[in-house]
Amino acid sequence: MGKHVLVIEDEPNIIEAISFILSRDGWDVDTHSNGHDAVQVVQAKSPDLVILDVMLPGKSGYDILTELRGDAGTRDLPVLMLTARGQSKDRELAEKIGASRFMTKPFSNAEVLEVVRQLVP
Amino acid sequence: MPQRQLTGSRIRERRMIAGLRQADLARTVGISASYLNLIEHNRRRIGGKLLLSIARALKVEPSTLTEGAEAALIATLREARAADPSAGAEPDALEDFAGRFPGWAHLLERRHRRVLELERTVETLSDRLTHDPHLAAALHEMISTITAIRSTAGILAETRELEPEWRDRFHRNINEDSGRLARSATALVSYLDSAEDNEDAENGSPQEELDTFLGDHGYHMAVLETQDSVDLDGLIQDQPVLQSAAARAMARAYLRRYAKDARRMPLGQTVDALAQHGLNLSALAAHFGTDLATVMRRLSELPESVTGRPVGLVICDASGTMTFRKALDGFTLPRFGAACPLWPLFRALSRPMIPVTQVVQQAGRGGGVFRTFSVAQPMRAVRFDEPPLFEAYMLFLPLETGEKPATPVDEVGVSCRICPRDACPGRREPSILTDGF
Image (cartoon, rainbow over all chains, first blue to last red):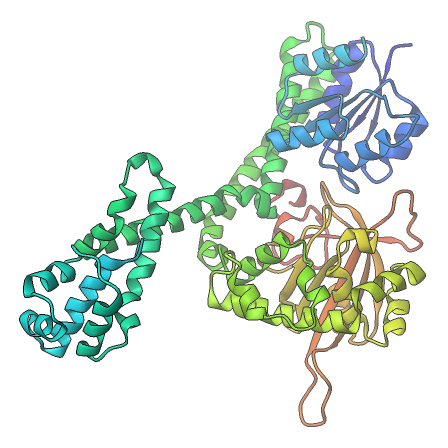
């Protein structure tokens, strides 16, 4: 069984594309599209890596990450944040609250693969 | 350095108004005509006894000769120099320049003011993405669609052996996404075209100036918490963001009401009451013997360190126009135009004096879940000789971590233009987000 990634993103065609390329790369992919209960889903599924969009319905990716970092079980979980805004203040905020990596949309598949392989070798 | 040179220009002006020749005035005050000529052309310093003598001879107050509109001119020129020190404008020559070449000095002053105005406009436009939720939502939508297209196209181009069913599926996704992108782009252009009509009215509007002023202070005015009598005009005068007279009048009304609220619910007593009742609005109203609207306003005026949670508030008048906006992350308030008619705020407006509490979630990305408390009540004491005029309040609190809403969550929007709900009974106009088509 491959390494387990949870993709939290609300855009169905992005979910499908990311799921496809990660599956082909040997990952076991789970997806979720709502921010409100995302923390509970992460805790229930215990993935090796979370790919987390910032703008989600229900709760922002920043709030979700803050809660994950406040929980002993997910404090060190690798989290790749995705955002449509690449301003330095967004990057700084993501780093401050504990994002493992930060990626600005639109990204290439090769970039996503490279980063997830670095985060979970 | 005193503005001696400009004083000379004013002496010359006053002398001519009085119909005196230079030689006559010089003789009266006991100096030579050539020396007065140097003074009047701002080439000699003047002050003390001679200034008093000249003022007496011209039948004016000495201050009339030493103060005037030129002080503002000098200040602006000094400001212009400070804004561009590399130009090498000589500080010592400033007053001489203003006195000897007043026309050029005024021209420079006006150009400098114009530059400041234009800089402010540029700043406002640059900041638009942050403050215009319509634009931010539309661009986010487009970038998400582009991301999906780029990733899907990458799969189609780079995957050597792609099963036909996957290939067909990704082709279909790209086709859908490219259609969405085209519609998003068209809608965005249309929005930007129509928004131009609103720009003049909204950029730097009095309401926006007031919002900026309150936002800069975190909606909390410490000076009004500790002092019984505060010079509100002085307080407003010191605020550079309150540029227009209308904004200053609105700020004065807000601060007056704030001071009244602070007297009804003093900070120390409110801290104690919050420790006792938490954010139970009804209990707080009973505790202080006041109404729910006052409690809502008061909570919006206090920092999060006091309330324990962020508190948002929106107030509208009987026409539904928002007169106060304190937004929170996850609960966006429209920068201009009408809000979502599904907000409990408007339900309260249609049923005055009946409090409404409801958990809502703003539709679309970034929308959080909030508990709202709304009530509409008369703006002032009701009378027999005039119909009551109502205003509605909606206070909103983010749900606490792990808090489960006891009532169903109502989905609401920000305003129709950026709302993705496609089958909404309250929709007034199509959304610029393709999800809404």
